[in-house]
Length: 165
Image (cartoon, rainbow, N blue to C red; front, side):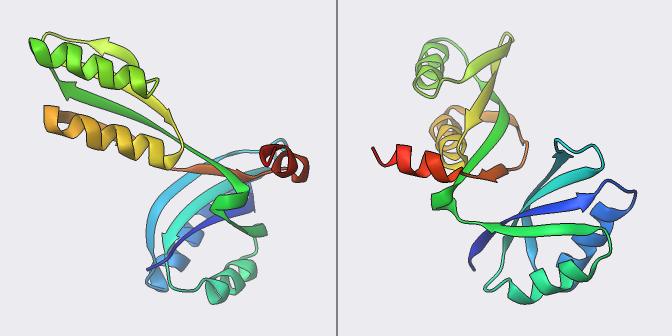
């Protein structure tokens, strides 16, 4: 299936999240990631939804029918800034500790909790960066893992031009 990222602006009202997620579930789409937060307008929230789906046009039409949905934008990975945050507790002892810390340095991961046999890292960045970090520390033993879900915004027209330089 194809993974799609939707940026959905909704009225900041009770039950909107439940209605949106129910609609996607009824259509048989797996929600890979869902993050909701405020926008510059206090009456509006932004939902960043990553779904596995072959085609989203029908779902976008159905979402538009929901009374609290203000705007839906499908974001293209090439023209959006996407970020995730993850906390990863890695098993460490002896020589493994310095090896894990070296991997963390390569990914700008920050040790936020150090125990006798584990280190918890905070890693932020593109979804690929976060996933790569997790895969590189997996052989050492992941004791715990949590991800925030993806947040994304379309790039400004000017930044696309600057990025090409």
